[in-house]
Image (cartoon, helix red, strand yellow):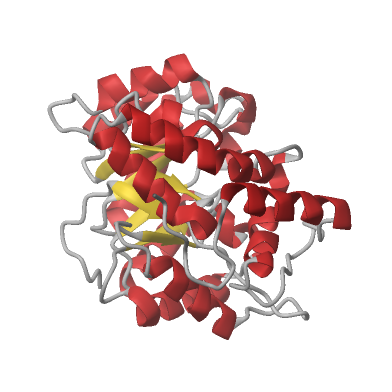
Length: 320
């Protein structure tokens, strides 16, 4: 059962990584330490697991249960847990949703079904059926994960508005449309609805620009490494302190440029390596098809950490 009743996603929500042992099994001790490090950051409002940052595509159903169990033991009494729902089939997504509620999630982050990739944007009733199936399986609030148009699994604005109207469980959108003009339309439209839908930015490579448009939160894998800076930036923007926001953003820039460099798919791989360099993780093991970074890229990450002034002792650095 959800530990935080009536949770509405907002604020700074890091998406946590999933450490693995050398044999690719889950490093449970490493996961507990990582959750403790992230959970200790003042100002975060929840954590996300079983999502992109935790390599959910390579995790079995039972492994996702175990991740939820460990997260609940580590943080469940202190922070809401957002559980990713990563499935192409609606019935499997509903099964994951029931599991998430049973293991203590306070909200669901619903990934788009790859089935929509061959023209699903032209059939809004498919998205409606998918989300209704999930909503019928649980009472948890839902976060819609919006992908960019290039993915072919994005939801047009008109479809999103239908979803919000017909599936009241939807409380937020994790916006990765990757289009500044469309993103601003999402922010100004969805948060002004009679039943507002919170826009959580995941435009982590241009986070300040995104936040100043008026997002009421962010959900980001970079929070697994720099949650303190994300909190500081969010607070500065909320306070309309542009001078401070620009200073924090400048400090974050080396890290986000290193994390989100091509190929984009290595972003969480890089975050694991950064945690090793910072002494917060013992080893950076990723499951295939992801592959370990080469020495030159790890050196670039080391230089970015130095440029950003991130602490190496396991404690998050002051964002001031």
